[in-house]
Image (cartoon, rainbow, N blue to C red; front, side, top):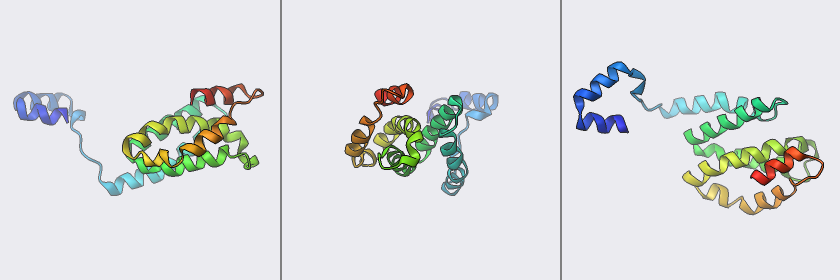
Length: 148
């Protein structure tokens, strides 16, 4: 956007800066390619969330945040997935609770910016289930819950 404004106000300078720094020319990614990118990267990010390595898990969270900024519609299934991991009846997914809480905390902002109903429809359940994250036996899960 700033390059377009600069092109309108100072076209010679804009051309010179484009020649020096060609990466500043931004082209919109076609919608069909966005879908392909999301389909390729999203499963890897979800898998990275549950890595034993905390740096890989944080990288997965950050990647999901970037993907949510590209297309906010991925927030809905990711929030639902996180809620299933927090549900007390999912004993098989209890080890995923800390990652689920961190993922939810990362996705709240893009969900609210683009379509607040994504979050507001799930808010009562999110708050109810996140209270169970306060666990005296699991410092990491408690910390992530309090940060959330």
